[in-house]
Length: 316
Ligand code: CP
Ligand code: NVA
Image (cartoon, rainbow, N blue to C red; front, side, top):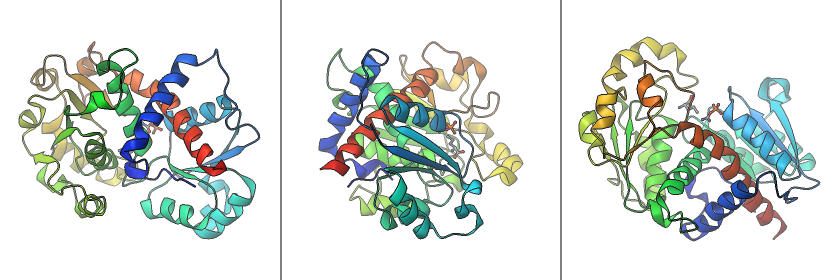
């Protein structure tokens, strides 16, 4: 049985299948119904807000013939102190998979260890792997020849990540760049350089600890970049640090001038929600090379592919 808690839970030789299935499901949407989750219920346990992740998973499970069951953490006993392990064991008796958005990354690992059904990480403070796979797929749609190898089209490309370079998206993109053979440069305040938890993860994965570039100069990071990427400066759970973060990160806003310093055909990407006037200028969000809404849509297609592949692993 397979879980999807971090980028590397699919091995390089499995990526082709996951990406190709996402492309097929996207092309066939509405014309072809897949019953890969027929008779199954997948629970989504959310401890944080969500628009894209919650809706794309609920719609995706439904479109695969399954039944999505939304559980707000505070509506179940987990929110009143029932243990993560007991929750995993009990829910495993009822449902066929768990999709979990929470704070502590250890919580998704403990659910996976104690339960007997696949667990998908729908964002933790440490990683957001569903977003990274979707983003990579969205880039590859632009770069691969029609019907060509999506994963191969990523190799050697450069992504520049600006702003909160210690957040879940930055961590996930460092792991993702290693997995997909991409180069990554991150620019943010020195205090927000990628941290010890990420470095330990790189070591565990046998990825080089210096496999990313970190700089405090945003123009250096975007030089020769194929993608300029940013995320909110105040992630969920960091609201109390808002004023200080905005002060520290304001030199890293993606302005039209900064975007123009990347490759002439560079794409702009953002996992959303965006805060125009903070991490990105409205003009950049509206630029014809901004593909933010393709990214959002592709959450559905990529997650349906991930669900289908995990469901297959249960039957094997
Ligand atoms: N990008 C993303 O995960 O969005 P939501 O927080 O709306 O799910
Ligand atoms: N870094 C952001 C991502 C939101 C999708 C957060 O954790 O709030």
